[in-house]
Amino acid sequence: MLAIVSPSHALHAPQHEFFRGERVPCFETPSRAEYVLAELAARGHEVRAPHVDSADVLPRVHSAAYLHFLQTVWQQWLAIDPANASVQPFPSVWPVRTLRHDVEPDNFIARLGLYSMDNGTPLAAGSWQAAKAGADAAVSAAALLSQGERAVFCATRPPGHHAGADFMGGYCLLNNAAIAAEALLARGCQRVAVLDVDYHHGNGTQSIFYARSDVLFVSIHGDPRTEYPFYLGHADETGSGEGAGFNLNLPLPAGTSADRWFAALEAACQRVTAHGADALVVSLGLDTYAGDPISKFALQSPDFVRLGQRLHLLGLPTALILEGGYAAQELGVNAANVLSGFA
Ligand code: Q9C
Ligand code: ZN
Image (tube, rainbow, N blue to C red; front, side, top):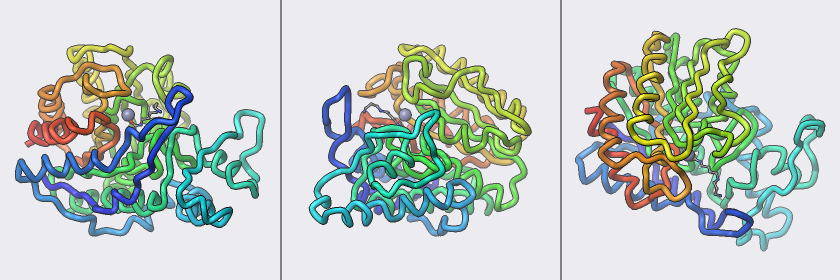
């Protein structure tokens, strides 16, 4: 399978995040993409750089204010103090419920809170460049599918599915899967399905398409009662307005076995088929792996071959977009196993 990877991913290399109140090394590291690239090369997959600019698609997914913030966030941080070059900014205040979202604060940390859902999305000097390259990969995949390619894998990082129209979260800055879906629609698709198999619910993707019937969102994930992102991803979220019936959440308890996970995948795939989509975007999180350090499903490496086989059976032009997966050394094998199953 054709793969798209930009070396710019490595420009997003923050040092630490918060975990149970402590500062710990980031789980979402450049080495993840390097392990994936190495395994793609070992198995003879063709790897290309992105060849299409996502600039005209980004505003279809994200607000202009958020895009401006993300593009300039590091300059804004350095403008406060040049010594911030070696300091990571984190939000510490958020406009929840009765607080206002419509006035952008002059205070940088308050502005960062306005555009964040959590304090779990570390930033670095090259975060925008890396995220933009990921979005370019997503629209490049859409272009290749519209030219007749059956499937394209984007080894993007940072991941995307927690990012909403106007906020970052859960390591995600730009919603690459939503960007791929919009690019497919712009290239003539009438109906697109997004199937999210990351361990965590794709709250950003769900919210972007929640009121729409042209993009079906289906997700299998850890039950948000106990798992991140906690505040979205329940089974009773089925879509609103025009989008009523076009959102399907299949939450599973932490500790779920591979057998039960594949039963949920079957239900998810049947809903995708019923949608009559002309293209599929897979939010390919590999943090369902038993060895994942922050997740609690029990898939083994060979199970990812089976996942690829079931995705292939859907018979659709397919963009596979890398999301999570934090057992970095096993990530290459697990990702490449999906591609092998698809082949
Ligand atoms: N600080 C994705 O898989 N935080 N994001 C975990 C460690 C949230 C994962 C706790 C995990 C987000 C794309
Ligand atoms: Zn995840």
